[in-house]
Length: 164
Image 1: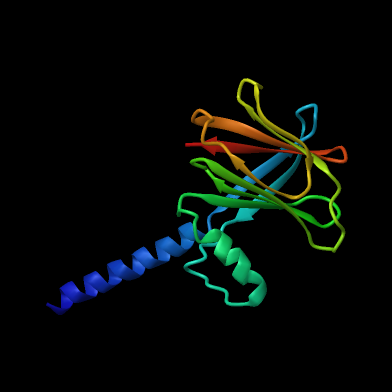
Image 2: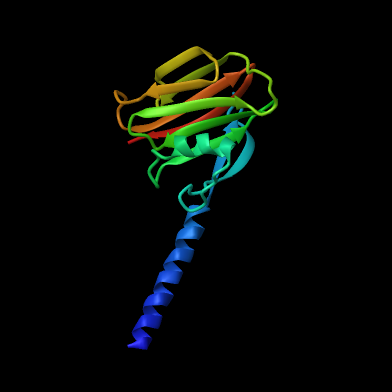
């Protein structure tokens, strides 16, 4: 009887450790210039907010934003230039995609161009005056792979978006 209990306890510990390792798996993001040359590689570690709760006031807003994300969905963040951080979530999406551009140094971002194109290059969405916070309704988009392109003063980044 005690041998069965030890095996059960060992299994639970192994599953918990595997869940922690999976929750912190890195995702690699590449950015490209207009010619298609890779300009940077960013490794993003996605923390599971239910495993690592943070009760600080600043992170409470982030936690509220993440509470609607499913475990298989990701929030991507990348620091671009001049202390600006680009956040895109959820990805994959079933309809509503949030794109946020925030400043870490207090400088207000300049207007940017935000576009979503399908894999054939057809433009499905465009905003020439993106100011930093946008929720894009992709419900009417067919399921598939899309590219979100952001141009801030000539600095271009491209993200792959999956519409389920």
